[in-house]
Length: 110
Image (cartoon, rainbow, N blue to C red; front, side, top):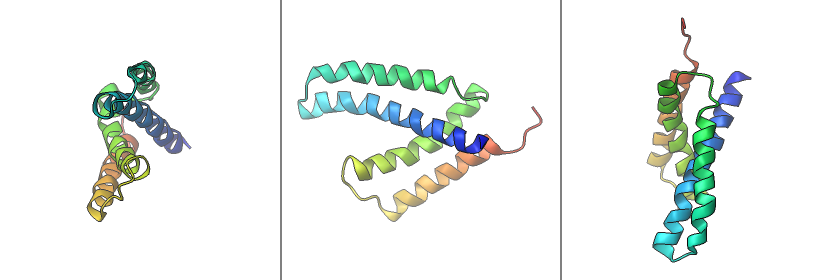
């Protein structure tokens, strides 16, 4: 159960970061409303707070989070940008998730 909660928290954290970065992108590159910066700032603040909820050393959390971020970003590419990821994208995301699992769930003495 710990593993499922950890991965779910990483996914929510990644979504908060991606949304927080995507909204300014829409404003800057697609001439959307600058009011998008308000929810972007809230989303990035949520992202930072969510990172503090992980029950491990900060460096380990950041390293493992990167693997989940890669996976969620590839999923975002597919769902939001409507670009079907390549087999290489899926392979890379899978390797990143494997790295996250090794970092977060390997047996530790401390």
